[in-house]
Image (tube, rainbow, N blue to C red; front, side):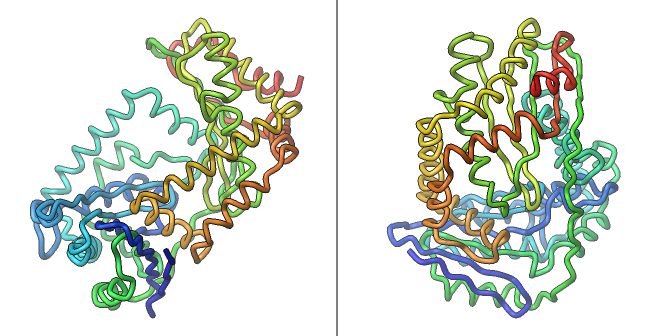
Length: 420
């Protein structure tokens, strides 16, 4: 299997990989604009635009968009993150031209019908309400808000309800004009796909787009701080975050392996000490996420109001201990888990197409998978211990607490325990 990459004259990039055993293909357009690219008054518009993509074009109604893909047994969907908005489909081999035609249609010919805007406005407000009623979802939005206070990177992707209630056709059109240029789009496909045919069709569909100056996002500033919201819930929700490396930082793989060893599975330190030995929670985990110029190492747990203080303290203790006695066996296990996750994901054409789009966004090319495996293998126990030491003792932190959390320690207390 060979990755092929072509750039059209207007800057649109096309990347594909044929998987000979596949009878289907995944393809989509990844737009390098998401929540992070919104101005304050635009917060939520990228996600609103994603919703409107399926609500009708100059050539297809909303129903015709759905029927075009589902009549051939495929599916079509989209998502918005803080740095990208993706529109993608999965279809059988003979229907890839149709799928790309539909995706191009929703990107290039949206009508933003007033009635449909009102319908989706109501849908998104319901989505916001649902998120607010889901503590182990909303706490991560609050944590992000504290980590990157007063920045687009810290705002919720769904947006504030007040913004959603006032957005109109011009707001949507303005965001498209600002961020949906051809050099901000990556067409990625994997599976039963022919690259030359894909390029030919992309040229016909997108070749007439004029390049435009991209509006860059503001540099990230990790601020940190605490948010505590008391509510009568069965569980106290605890989330703690520290700044980690961005995805171009050489320390990215070290941060990933640290998070896996600390709380990435049933054998991890947090799971074994806090859940298995002490029974203080049902769910506890650590994870590492990355953006262009920053990242977050996050720990989450749900426990009772009576035990949240003990859980928080033990979490800090485990972080400190990892800096001094993380073993080669733990690091090897975390490396194996990371490699397995990466390589298993490549068995899916959808995951492969998404990875290629992200690699082109980050590096301008798709590095061989062997490069990533080598970087994982090159992370040493000393690297992980040093990273753990930095996280445990030196880094500023963000803390979010929700539920019966009156007895939970504040951020200052946890900071003091880190350096004690």
